[in-house]
Image (tube, rainbow, N blue to C red; front, side):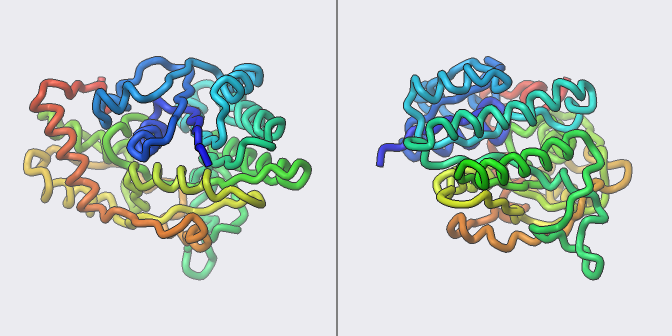
Amino acid sequence: MDERFLVTGALGCIGAWTVRHLVREGVPVVALDQATDARRLRLIATAEEVAAVRFVQGDITSLDSVEAVLDEHRITHVAHLAALQVPFCRANPPLGALVNVVGTVNVFEAVRRRSDRIWGLAYMSSIGMFDAGDGDPIDGTLRVDAAAHPRTLYGVTKLANEGTARVYWLENGVASVGLRPLTVYGPARDQGLTSGPTRAIGAALLGRSFEIGFGGATLFQFAPDVAAAVVAAARSASGGAEVYNLGGTPASIDDFIATVESEVPEARGRITHTGPGLPFPDRIDDAGSEALGERTWTPLRDGVRRTAALFRERLARGELRPVDVGLE
């Protein structure tokens, strides 16, 4: 079977890592994004790997645009990652709903019309559709089938997308797999509500202080691991509208800072945090995700070490700019 992947939102963090993952597998990949700046992909990939990608500027809010790229490149698998994150949905609610909800409907509709040759569809949902109180009343753990009570418009859009996936399966037989990450970290994670931990590492290496805007505890997921799960999900979408919580490393922000200071001596005394914890459950049950195959979640210490090493390498070559780590 000759695979040809389309990655929407390919110039974002998870998108860039997904593209790199596919390139390193030798799989043809088309990177669709409304933006044109591939700085995140260039940060994590070699020049040869970037050159192997077919870039297409396009807007998922246009069904015609989505259909055109699927047809021109004879796509067999879709990894739909394009979305506006919490701050951007809050700043422009109509645009957030247009991109996140209508854009996702367009992707599902375009795939439905080509279900004879598109064999897999994965999309990115989020733990962000849940409220902290949505965990189990006894142990606080978030189950995959928990009822969601979003506190943000972003969360509302992600809940809507899971509903879209379910209806497209029930009415049209379009199979899909949705994934729910929580706090994704690693190189190229430079924006969004939970980007603070990664930005803190970059700031420390650039000689700056940084205050993470939340405290408490969360579930950390190394970006390359999430990308690997996305690819596995697209390949496993053979029936139903499945959705899985992703695993990772549970840790407090204090523990995260201590880990960074241990692995990155330059960070000592530079990283602080303020505010309450994230308004989401921090104990996550990832039961069922074994359907994606054996998943390895990088321990937090290893992920921090690898993040710092990549930043340090780029810095030594004069290739690490403040914008690359989410700083002005």
